[in-house]
Length: 110
Image (cartoon, rainbow, N blue to C red; front, top):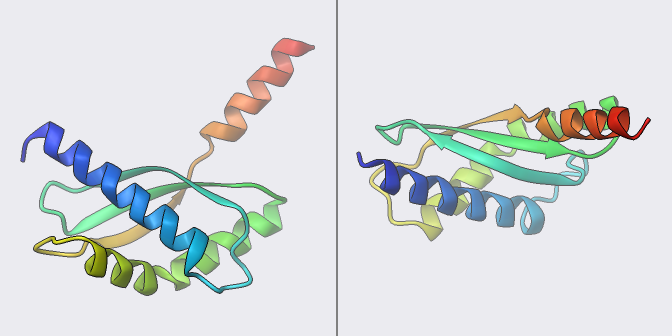
């Protein structure tokens, strides 16, 4: 599959997943989540969803557990909004890049 097409698929998936997390999920464990990236496999069977979560370590763990438990609802939203041959199986991965950038900024300020 062409690289530009995969980028478009990843971008659309990121938008749909972000909107679904922000609007449709009712799980109280899920806090403030930002979908930073989506990496779909070339065969569209799996997708890694990279998320950033604000809060304490406990809130982050609860949010990740809530997202993993809600993956079926999110996959259903993807299937209803996108015309794809397959709906990828989602895997949520915590993205530490935001925390790392914040830590570096604080170190530079000191």
